[in-house]
Amino acid sequence: LGEDRYEAMRQLVFYRPNEIHDMNQIPNPSTKVPLNEDGSETRQFRYPSPGSEPPVRIPRSDATEDPYNTSYYTRDTGRRGLDPANRNPELQAVKLALMDPNSPEVQEMKEAMQPKSSPGNKGRFATGPTDYDPTGLRAAMSANHQALEASLDANMPDHLPYPEWYNRQDQVIAWYKDRDLPVPFGATGWGITPKEQRVAKW
Image (cartoon, rainbow, N blue to C red; front, side, top):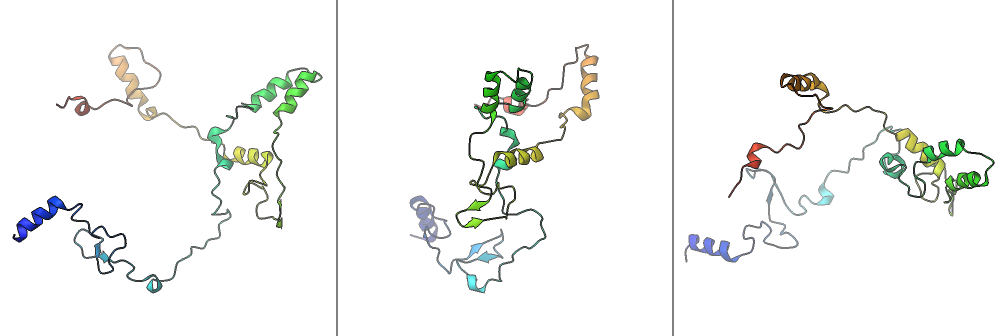
């Protein structure tokens, strides 16, 4: 058959003929997997064995914040005020402050603005009291609205972003004035399709 014909037949018949592990679920320990283009660096299955590897390096630091606290709801300011049952509570409080405080309807609306869910267990769990998180936001059972609002206040964005065309606004104004056109608000430029993409390909 010959080496060339055999290779051509193998490429035609085999599924993924060049798969380095030969489609084995558990790689052959003797198979060397190249790590770079020239193949000078290779890796084998469980070689070196895990027991022969150097000990795990545990990073240590004097961090003031808990590195394992990955909760997002305590800093999710983007969805703040989207509660369908209590939209924009600050504006609603201003409206109620302008109304008659002695009105039963106003008093009822003020009570409706107060959260009806649990105020948290104040750090007392079935295993006893805990003090690892004074805010109580690390656990769902100890979380409370007051601490959540304070955390969201601390994470509210306070930067003033500038538009993309801020540093070239003089050029934008000059472009319109040179063509005797009214100067619009802002500048265009985003979303323009390149000419190469608009050329039809048949």
